[in-house]
Length: 239
Image (cartoon, rainbow, N blue to C red; front, side):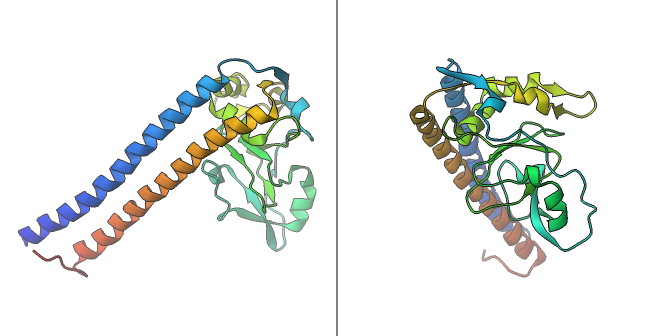
């Protein structure tokens, strides 16, 4: 009946408006964060070094092939797991293959940078995770007594950081970042105290974005579920 159809449309439209409002808030926070990062990183800091000089180990790629036989028990982070970092649906590989690529194993506070295809996606490994990375990702293990991984993460997300990555991009058919050139990126950094202050502010905005994104996801799933029930007739609306 037409009145029932109109009521269904009103209900779904109302849920959609809530999702849109949260998405608008997300866009506003993204703009705020971008402006903040650009203002923070516009002026060089007192510290200055090549990226590799700021690392405990060589910046490296991850696992090249997955065709090793055996029980898959070791998680491998791929580009699809980055931004936002999602470690619940990683690809799994056998221990024997992980041992062959032991140099690219990741631990807490390792910085990850996507270097093929969707280049420039950044994430920092949280506490409690251990595993490996794919060939499309570079691992950057910083000397945390000098530079914090989250500081570098936010620098890479700023215009100066994005510009630096674009300058080391190679390939014409598929974007790729040269790890050799990445090692020679010149990084300007402040004292650890200043880095921690920058990270606190930027991380707070990231937490806000995560919370808002969950709200958008909630309303989108709600709209899908209610829409399915109402349009199929499994549930009826009261006119």
